[in-house]
Each structure stands twice: as C-alpha cells, then as structure tokens.
Length: 242
Length: 249
Image 1 (cartoon, rainbow over the protein chains, first blue to last red):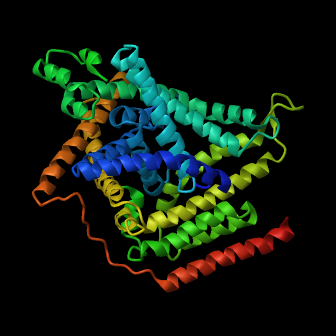
Image 2: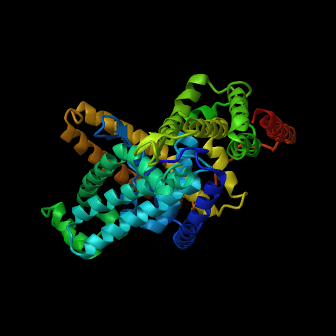
Image 3: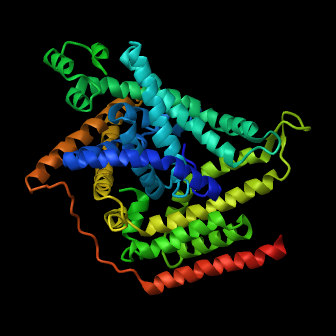
C-alpha cells in the first residue's frame, strides 16, 4: 500500500524522509562496501532488486474479488536481510513512482519507512524469532511474510492518521478510520502474501539450493547433503536453515 | 517495457536534459504540495495538464491510464475524511468541514501526481540514472539501480511468458491451481534473475569488468531558456495563488 504523491502535508513528508534516511544510509554503506570488495555483487544485487520489483508486480487473487499486489518485503528480507532491503526497497519504490505511478516522490520517505524499513525488519524479526524456537521453516516463512505485509499496512495507517487526525477523537479515531478502510483489502492480502511466499520458498528449497546457500538461508554442508540425496523432501530443509 | 517508460522514449522532450524537465515537472509537484490547495493546487493541476497534453505531447489515453492509479488511493483515503469518530452525532457521523478537507487533499494529490507524471512521461530512466552519479549519488548504488532497471524488463517479459504457458496448461482453472502457478511464477523469477546475473557476470568478466558499468548517455545540454521559462512559470503560479487566495478566502 503506497501513499500517493502529494497526499501527505510537506512537514510530514520531510519528517518521514528524515526518519528513513539513517536506515537507507546504513544499508547503502554496507552495500557499497560489499560492491567494492566483490565487484561481481553489483549484478547479484541488481538481480535481487529486479526480483523484488517483479514480485511486487505479481497479481494476487484477493478475497474481495479484485486483484492485489504483494509487497515482496517479507521474502526479500528473509533472502537478502533487512539492511540490503532498505536500499533495494528504496530503488524499487523509486521505480514504482516513476514507471508505474504507484506512490510518489514527495511521499517516498514515508513509503520507504513503511515498506523498506519497518516491513522487512518486522518480518525478518518474526522469522528469526520463530526459527529460534524451532518452528518449522514454512510456518516461520508464512508468519515472516504475513507480519511484514501487515506491519507495512499498520505503519501506513499510522502515517495517514498522524497527517489527518480525526476532528472528534484525534489520532486514535483517525487510526481506526484508516485502519478499517484499508483492512478490507490488506488483511486478506497479508494472508495471501504469506501463502505465496511459502509456495515460492518451497520451490526455491527444491530448485535453488546453491543460491539459497550463497545467501545464507541454507547452511552449506546440509544443503550439500540434500543436493547429494535428492530423495529428501523440502520439509527436511527446516532443520538446516539459519 | 512499461507504458510510461515507453512513452518517455518516444516523447517530444526526449532529447531535453533531465534537469530541464525536473525543474518544470518536480517544481510543479513542490508547488502543489506547498501552496494552499485552493487556488494553488487547482492552478498547478490545470497548468500541468495543459503542458502534458500540449507542448509535451503526452497522449490523453496513456495519461489517464497512469493517472487513475494514484487517484484510486486518493479517493479511498479522502473518503475517511468525510466522517468523524465519536462526538454528539454518535459513534460515526459526518465530519463538519469533511468534504472541504477531502476536496483539498484530492486537489493537492491530483496536481502533485501530474507534476511527477510530466517528468516521468518525458524522461526515460536510462537517461536519468547514469546522470545521478554527477549529482553525487555513489556510483555503486547507481550501478545496482541500473542493473535492476535493465533486468526488470527482461524478468517481467519472462514472467509474462511463463504465465501464458501456465494458462495454456490450464494452470489458472481452479483457485488451487492458480496459487500453485503463482508460487511457480515467483520461484521462476528468482531462479531466472540469479541465472541472468551469473551469465552477465561471465560475459562482463570476459570483457575486463572492473566493477564499473559504463553506459552511453545521450548528449544533452541544460537549456537556460527552457529552465528560465519554467522558473518564470512556477513563480507566476505562486504569485497568482497569493493574489487570488485573499479575495476568495
């Protein structure tokens, strides 16, 4: 859910830009360091950005009958980690603003904060927490993607409620209004994105062990064992993820 | 290629320097956001529309198809401003001045979106991204953005073809099949993007890749006349808003 161009008052637009900047700068610095040490990562990172952009362009069947788009932040954070997602998410949002008219330039800071900072961190945090308690991989992936999508939508509602407080009940009333209007599409969409991410991850575990190992999603030795024994199912990968 | 970028490549202003178009398009957006919605944003909206359909030569149909996307969000968001929660009228009642607030937001958003669309419909990304290095953006970041941009079209094309193949194999006939197909589509996009990156890496390594992607940028100079006219137009809009605002309010 992107806030459209010009929707936020100037002070709010600037404030959200300032709030997002440290995360994007931190991600950019680590990305630049990585590219300088390993020049070939430019292509891999570009491919990751393109994957995130394309994932956000997939049409999901929605419960309300219409079609919606996933944010892709949950899967992106699990695969590429949140700091990298802050940069890739910013690039993706910039492209969406200029190539698809989704979001905007004045609202880029607010959209980056919700979709490229809070979403990835919340989703990744949930995924890591669940994995720490030995929750099965696909369950952790589902909740990681679900929380990433839902937190993005919650932060956007907070941003809108802060910009347009209710005349009667102020911020809480406005939060309820924006939350309930967008919940009709966003809660089913979060469930849909969780399911889609599980399906994608299941196929990736079966078909792209090398890439997942390189990204650190699978542990090298165990991935190698599974590669040597293709009879093992995707579920057995649960024991070897970080 | 995406419709807005395709239109930008065949735009009348394609050969103009991105700075020329940024001053005009993004200047209109800044005015729309910072001036009072009435009459400021209304004036910006009319001006942006006139420039888009007139000198910039953007086809009306293409503009509408791009413009309705942000408009949908704005209408949904503005609807919430019509009601208030709590108060003497019950739990939810009509907000006093709600239609005015909603109208102002709609006006501001519509005008600001047109400003950005003016820039987007006349400036291809391939002209803009390489020049960001001169604007102070670190080269590695610009390189990643360039690869993302160029690979996105190839991936979108792959995804379209895979979707067509899935449909031909009855992959979208039931809800369960649609979900399975979608999962396959996402995984295929991942595999193909990494495969392309690996092949691109091998190709570039063979040509002595040193970590910098050098691309040809079309020659263009900043037009002092165009920029001065744009600044004059923006200043006139701001002045007209301040003049008209007082008697109307």
